Image (spheres, one colour):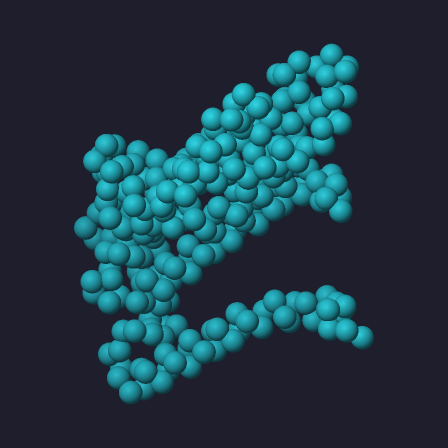
Length: 271
């Protein structure tokens, strides 16, 4: 029996899934206990109790200065920016990708332009965005759109080019015009790929959001992390990082479930 052919059963799969997380937690709390034993005032690796106290203070108590619950206010502000940016990027990427991949007259100028735009490091444009759009919400959303939309468009373009030519010829034989081809043949084939592209770009979108919030914002998860870093408040930073990771995972899971339920034929078609 070759290793490549071994398949874990359900119990073994669950164990293998949990094992790396358990090892990471064990390594962290072992290091934390060791450092705190040597120096109870050490801030680098806070204990579980310290992080629980910080979360209780931020998530379940009102801030004395503003009267708001900071944790949930930061979460709502970040999710609003992220959702708006991803929504615009998805719509723009889908439109440009279909145009570049399905209509040769549009593809000739769009394809090289999308390639160049996808190579521009979005964080390098952040100062320009702040100068042009100001320090408000618009610049943060635009950064996410600039960073995500060209990559989605290139992926959609490639998938559009992979649609069998026979399907397009048959549809035209039955009298379909360009708009009918796009709406009835091309678009349904590309919608599941759009959701997969969004899943792949979630990490980058969060990166752009955190960077923008860290530089110019008065709320948000990234703002809070960079605000407390000057005090070495790792008991706040670590829970916030874990929370961001959990949010990203939940978004990825939701998109995966949506893809499976809305387009059940997609996985079977690939097989």
